[in-house]
Amino acid sequence: MLINPQPSDEVIAGIYKNDYFILSQDQKGSGHVETLKKSTADRYLDILFPGNKKVSGDLLEIGCGNGDFLNRAALRGLKVTGIDYSPHACAIARNQLEGFQAEVFQGEISVLEGKKECFDYIVFCDVLEHVRNPRLFLRIVHDLLKPNGTIFCIVPSLDSWSAKLLKSNWMEFKLEHLSYFDTKSLRSILFQEGFSEIQHFPAKKTLSLDYIARHFDKFHVPVWSQLMGIISSVLPNFLLLRPFPITASGIGMIAKKQSRTANLILSVIMPAFNEVSTIKSGIERVLNKQLREMDIELILVESNSTDGTRAVVLEYANHPRVSVILEDVARGKGHAVRTGLKQAKGDFILIQDADDEYDIDDYDAVIEPLRDGREAFILGARHGGGTWKMRKFNNQPLHAFVLNCGHWIFTGLVDVFYGVWLKDPFTMYKVFRRDCIEGINFECNRFDFDYELLIKLIRRGFRPKEIPVNYRSRSFLEGKKVRIIADPITWIKAIVKFRFVKV
Image (cartoon, rainbow, N blue to C red; front, side, top):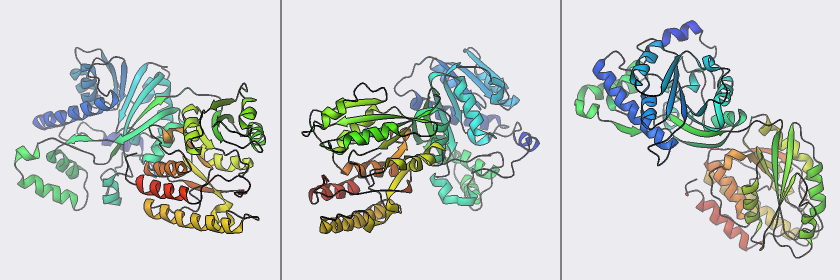
């Protein structure tokens, strides 16, 4: 979401005056704000360096303001550099940083453009929404970071409770805020600009009722500004000035610099157990598949088959684009996929069964929205999600009818429990950016893993885009492994359980 038309440079410069920061012209008030900001800085530093009060390295803060964060970072042992648009703020920051290894530059991030791999950490809190070109900003940040360096980013979030409550009156809708993000779009742009191992968290700040009231006075919001004015006029000072932590509108993300490669990589995970009749042709089709500006790595997870499947898999053990993982015991498809996920190094991940039910030529359709950055999570909806087309067993029509009825019922349960509207949530073709699953602990071993993966990604805020794919379901006589009584029980457990567990 962008402001359109964008305000001119002259208008923006007029906004960032010496009184831009709340209480900046009041000495007593400035001291109060400094206390709040340093408390928030300590909170953020504890997230960036969990359990470490003394650290080392070079840290850059973009939009350093009066230098409160830099001051707290320098006290922990970091060599700090700051940059800010305001000459007035830079002067205050330099004063705060006397006696430390510190530099403060005045201007935009472009004054550092051209420097390469100078910093271990780059922090930009409440900054990205102010820049005209977030992608260019992140590219410069990427260049400034040392290999495997870390970014720490805070932005107002469109999916925060305050944005949902206030809607068009949201206090973050300001003229100087040029771009707006939600969790999904922020993760997407970070991933596209070369960052991985992305973690997000609610950005809890230390505020006071006095600060909040003054904020609503400066940035007027109907009803709320009046309400906070009344509260500030009747409460005693000791209550107005009491600091407290609150997550109001921000979301934070930590990510690592990822080395740029010529082509993106798709990791295809293929679990295999007793699939000797189809495994070789499936492997060959994956390895022969050509994707635009993308390479494919194939991860084969063989679960100690009894029909010769392992011997076929071992033929590819030395293939440069194949990783072979051998399990000593068959613990289920879910366990095999979980094992493969730990090995995946690609930008995107696709799960491919070895049973020849899906059409590998559909890779192009399900990958395109990911590669172009429009989506993070794709479901290949079999036959477009047409339930009664899903399974047509010529030799077992009753089994097909029962499974299609179950598909309709379980789809309804998922839609109701998770507030989505999906047609084929249980498709094997689940394709997603690798960062979507970073930090998620998976536990299911059988086909309930398909539910677990779907649900946990939805719970993280990734709403899947369904794209029609071709599908030919094999019958139980042809080797389908679903247990028609026992497995649905595990699916119900997964639907209920993962609605409430922390993701």
